[in-house]
Image (cartoon, rainbow, N blue to C red):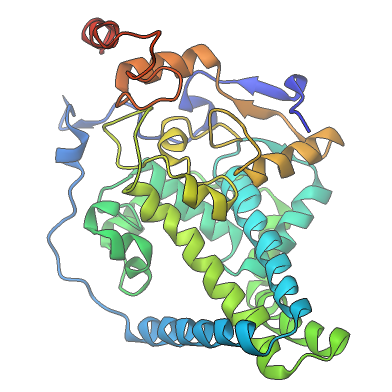
Length: 360
């Protein structure tokens, strides 16, 4: 299904979102920051481990490994397919819901779609969508500083899961209080989930996924719990965490070489389009989170476009192609598919001349 251009709006700057991002001018004591990598270094501080969280996540991963063993040896095919189904809708609850709709406001959704997304999001259990969106806005506004919840400059392990195993840096809490979250508070569906999260989440993420296989196709309790619930949830957590870790390390930076986020097709495949991370951090208001809008691997874009076709999603924001081209030529690393230095129609000296004469 091709996107309807009438449903899209092109935006030239991140000011349209109401949230500051990496491309905004940054200053320290009134001086322009010219080297983001030099400025965005983690404070050399000892991590304060939270052993309760360490124990919990250790159990979750051990349970997931046993679930994988059961998938191979004992679980019914229906249970594995059910786990895959829950993974798909749970991931969409995070990508299309918490991320693209509520965190970035890249499009608007009518209440039936928001209700579907909040159900999907609750199944995923990655905290209430309100808190997820808040933390993600902090991540973008203060990316790779000590105020970033999963600061990638502190290493792969920290950005992947370590940030959940230790106490938050004081800057995370302090800077988080500075954000305007009035738009999130104004959404009654979002606030209903937040208010009743610890009643809804256990039912959606743990109880129902375990009971349904036992009742509907007489699966064993062990296979239902360890496959449909624990393996599915743990696998989804790790795929989502890869956006914070692998997609900040392994890949090219065709849109902005001064940022840590990269383009990672493998992460995109498992997270339904969230791995085109250099583009996303350069243009965070694009509902596609990628330039090309290809549905493979960008299932989330297809999902949003499907609801846009029936009018439940609207005001889809995207970026003008000329704006993308200018950004690629000005700040890219030369790996862009069309405007990269390897393009036979674009000479390297032309790019260098453009950068020399057009850098702000």
